[in-house]
Length: 85
Image 1 (tube, rainbow, N blue to C red):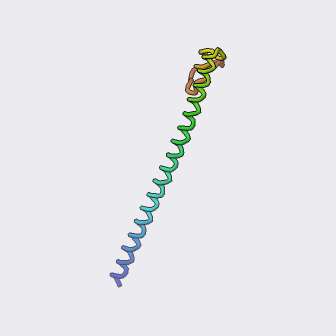
Image 2: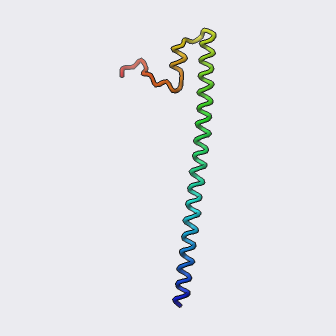
Image 3: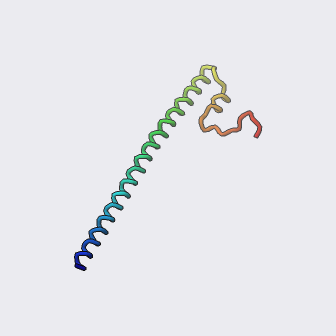
């Protein structure tokens, strides 16, 4: 009887470890999938910014925008605006 109970306990432990392992792998997979989605989104944003910068530089080259307008249109421009600080 004791041997059967011990075997059941071991089997339950093995099953618990397997379930925990599967849960850990599933969580890691989901996190990696989310990171891939964030990378794709960031790349799309960077491409959009590059296109915007090229467009503003083209406008400057043909006289439709000033150097200041090109600089201030940069997506990473952190200079203060006309409002008070």
